[in-house]
Amino acid sequence: MLRSRELVFTGIAAVLVVLYLGFALRYGSAFIPPSSPTPTPTKPVSRVPVASGPEISGTIAFGLRGDIYVLSGKGYLPLTADGRSHEPSISTDGRIFFARVEEIDGKRNVDNQIVPAHLRFSNVVSKTPELSGEQVVLNGLVKAADGFHVVTWFDSPAVSPDGKRIAVVADNGSGASDLEVFDAQTGKLIVGLSQGSNLADPSWSPDGKTIAVTSYTQGAPRILLVPADGRASNPVTTPEGEPYRASYSPDGNWLVYTLRHEGKNDLHAMQMSGTRRDVVLTTDGKSWNGVFSPDGKQLAFLREKDGVIDLYSMDLGDALSGGSAKSAVKLTRGEGVDGASRPAWGS
Image 1 (cartoon, rainbow, N blue to C red):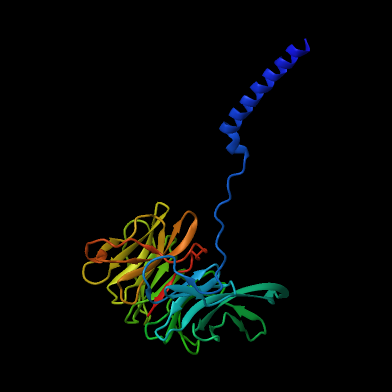
Image 2 (cartoon, one colour):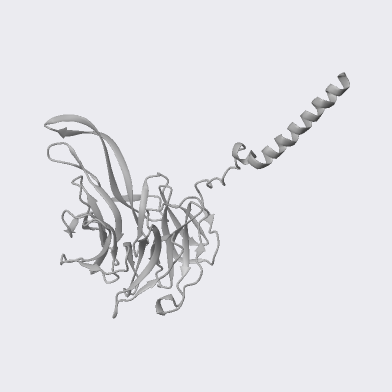
C-alpha cells in the first residue's frame, strides 16, 4: 500500500516538474529581469580617440553632457569641466565662445516688497584651447541703479567671420528672445536687430552682412535672413515641415538646416545663389544640427541611434551637384552628446 502511494506521489511530482519547466520556458522572460542595457560610457576627462574615420581637418567644438569638447586630428578632449556650458562657436583666431549657465541667491522687488529670489542667467565666455584662462565677454548679471540685479539669458553666441562681433539671442525675462550684436572684445552692445521676437540659433553669412536665425515668433519655426545693418528680414521658403538651425557654407552659396517632418529630423541644404534648390542630405529621420567644414566639403552633425546621440561627419561628395553624399562616420563613442547644442567647425 505504501509502495503504491509512493508511486502515485512520484508520478504527480514528475508531472508538476514537466509543467513547471514548460511554464518557465514559455513565460520565464516575463518574470526574470532582462539583461541590463549597455551603460553610458564615463564622461571623458582626457583625450579620447575618435570612434572611426579619417583624421579631421580643423577643429570641431561640441557640447557633451553640459561641457564643451574640442575635436582635432584623431581625438577629442574637454575644454570645460563645469557641467553648465553649451552652444560653442569658433572665431578665426581660434577662440571658442560658448554660453554658460549661472545661478545665485539674490533679492527681487515684487509689488514693492523685497523678497528672496533664486536667479538664473547665462554668460557668454571665450576660451582658447591652448590657454588655461577664460574671459567673460557678456555678463548676464548686471547691477541696476536701484541696487537690484538684472539678469539676462544670453544664448547661442555666434562669432562673425572677422571675429569682431558676436550675435546672440537675449532674454531679459520679458518673454522675448531678441537678436542682438555685441563687440567681441569689449562686450558693448552694437545693435539690436529685433524687438519682442522669439528667435534662436544665429549663424553669420561669410561676408558678415546677414545672420540666419530660427524664428518662433509666429509659432511654428521658420528660417529668417536678418541683415546685420538693421534692414527688414526675409524668410526662406523650405519644403513642408518645420525648418530650424540653419548654417551657411563657407562660400555663402548654401544653407544647411534641419527639417522636422512627421516627427523625424533630417538635414537639408538650400541653394542661396541663382535658382533656389533644396537638396536632401539624410533620410534616416534622426539627424540634425549640421554645420559645414571650413572647406565646405564635409558636414558635422548629430545623429541618434538606439537612444544615444553622437557626433558624426559626412563627406558631401557631389551631393550638392546632383549626386550623393558618402556614408556618415561616427566620431564620438556614445558618451551622450548634447542634442540641443549645435557643433561648430573652425579652421
